Length: 150
Image (cartoon, rainbow, N blue to C red; front, side, top):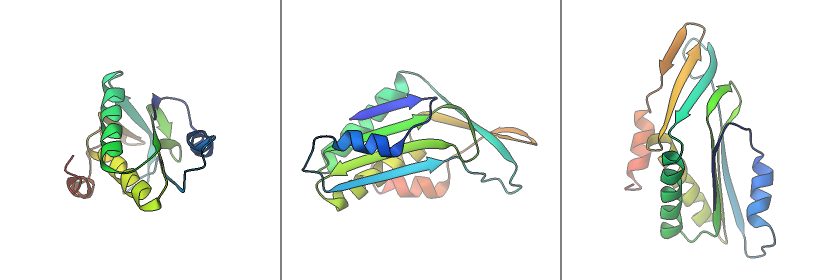
C-alpha cells in the first residue's frame, strides 16, 4: 500500500509498475487519475488551492485503504492526492488498485474515489479571475458514496 499527500506531480504509469513489480499474480490494474478542470459556468478558473491537515489526512486515507482491503480481494493499492496551488489540467489525484480479477479492482477503485470526493479531509478553493471561493461537494458525489456505507 502506498499513500501520499504531496505537492509534487506524479507518474501514474510508474506507480502502476511499482505496485506490480516482481508479481505474476496480478490480472488487473485499475487506475483513476483526476485532473483540475474548470467547472465554473464562466470558464474562468485560474487554479485550485487544496489544503489539508498533515498527519490527519494520511491517517484517514490509510483507514479507508484498509477498508478497501477488507471488502474486496485486492492485492495492493496506491492513493496519491496533491495539495497546494494546482493550475488547470494539472494532476490532482491518483488511485491505483491491483488485483487478480478486474471486478474487484474496479469496485475498490470506485469506492476509494467516492470516499475521496466526499469524506477525505481536503478543502478546495477555486481561484478565478473574479475572486476566490471554497468548493462544496456535489450532491451526486454524496449519493454515489452512500451505496458503500462508509
